[in-house]
Image (tube, rainbow, N blue to C red; front, top):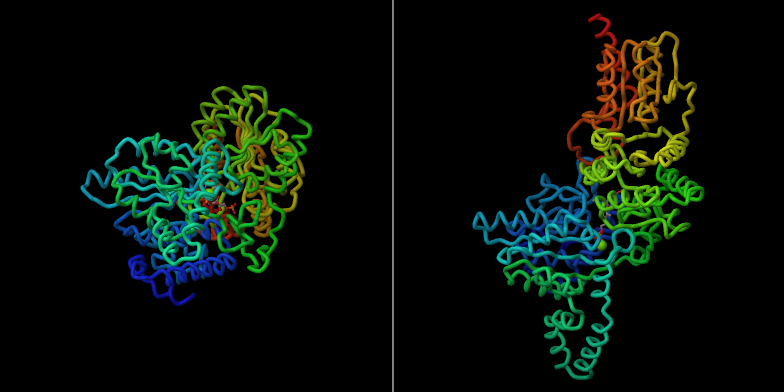
Length: 627
Ligand SMILES: Cc1ncc(C[n+]2csc(CCOP(=O)(O)OP(=O)(O)O)c2C)c(N)n1
Ligand SMILES: CC(=O)[C@@H](O)[C@H](O)COP(=O)(O)O
Ligand SMILES: [Mg+2]
């Protein structure tokens, strides 16, 4: 790591640095970002885009007295470097190393760990109210991206923030025009209009040329004009949207011009009421390969080669690619099928569908609640929507699934990618709640495919359901080899059947492979098993209860929280049927998991063949002893 960055112990040290040092510091920060993300993976584009903005923030405001809240938090690496953690970036996103998001355990400068977008303004509203009520005259600053600003919560918060003109609350909109892909919607269009106002640039250039043509004074005069640059933008690019709300607007400001940013932030700080600073930045700034990357400007990178920007290891085909291909085949056959994404067209695999049928895939911005209820409207209008989101993000749209889709018996299919433990992105990104939440929804159909073949089958079965919500959920990462069934009982696939089996192993989704591995290990101990994959978690197939009755122990395995998951459902069904076979439920502990690789967390959680086999032997002997 370079020297100046190493010399900083905290944000206060920034205030003694001169312009040249600060310019050099920005270069060192970009070098460390490239070095650490190339080695470890992470959010390169977003962080390269906020280097000057973050330096300016920490020079104008006094963290942690002044609270700085980062929306989504994926763009907080620079903040971490400037708050004493630059030396830890060699272990970025490593287990026990630096988290890729703010972390209260890491620093007093960090406030919000939740990586779900559009929450920062609500936190800021609460913090500012608390300051007012407790007599603190400190500032609250929320940094929110243009993408996160398309989330409904952000506007609920702005409505409240604007209600009280006495609160010292600064909203910094980091407007780079992108979520992963370009940000969409009317708001985005307005921001783009402000950002690219044709009248502003030529006028400013003309003034710059006139002032600096040939004499020294001109340069000084132009520099002095620097501070009023924003005023000219106000005049030339009217900013009514926010000021009509009652929030003072400052900008647009060049987010890579640290001096301009500091002047705008200082003006905002002096303002003493709710104020919005509109910073214009470029995602990937300083690394041309990122800036030029059309898909996502290296929003989220796996380890890569800095000279080419190419991933250093090519991951095997993942679940998403199976979905990406099959949904296009389905769309070919069914013109009523449409797709919805919440600003994640490529990550959820709807890009091929959108390429072939651009009028049938809708990007609604980071607005999952809207996506779900809009899908209900699409279904009422005679279409069959497929809403593709990461499993953890469906949490915030639970009420919409329950009362906008299911209550009206709308045929909407939810494809939940990244279901189960994801690992690297910390507690709020694990998809460990969807089975527990969605099994509460009356009439819902939930499928958990065990392999690519089953994903294709179950996706087709799901889109054929036109009178209820259907869900297909699958994990992050590579999809294993297809696992053929050797028999079927009702709608349940039998994957293994030993002679005189003692144990019924129920493997849900990706855990079917773990269940088979467990059975192999138990067989070596002379314990026979039947291994089944229910395919549909909800409604639970009665065959599971029938099969359970013929065994001495039921062992369920799932990549979901234990509370209210598959195992709970099976145990409840056995109780209801008066089947007294004991049940062992293997799932994810119901707690927030620190970041680590998915495989490491699954191992820690005992969701492996060896661990489950050992527990089964103990339980079986225990049960034999009790009977
Ligand atoms: C509720 C929710 N949905 C989706 C995501 C996935 N996601 C993470 S960052 C991001 C784009 C954020 O764009 P923006 O707010 O403009 O920040 P930028 O990356 O451009 O700095 C998305 C969609 C999320 N974190 N939270
Ligand atoms: C913050 C953000 O962008 C997350 O959505 C995360 O990066 C997803 O990562 P994966 O797409 O690698 O699961
Ligand atoms: Mg953005």
